Length: 111
Image 1 (cartoon, rainbow, N blue to C red):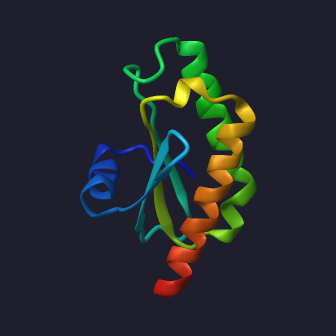
Image 2 (cartoon, rainbow, N blue to C red):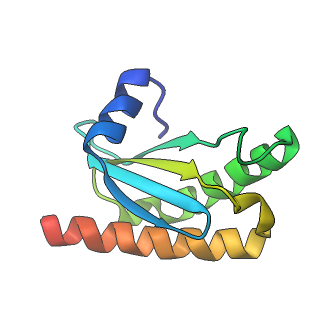
């Protein structure tokens, strides 16, 4: 359920719909693999310590896992933004929940 190829990431960056807020930006684009996929772009520039970057990635992956049944066939890339390291786990979790709801609404309108 994750994106591995650089071409997949560049396609999302080129064509993706953007939703921002809470120290994170979510890009989405339709895919043809038959299930939702997640990609992470967590910048060292925004979160210096590897342990904190890994914590953020674990939170994002777990949140995606719990919500993936609501998504259609889309590729999702989550980007970190400046200031995300100032947020605690509950704030990040709440921001992700808002993003997932917006993504579901956005792609249901299109279908």
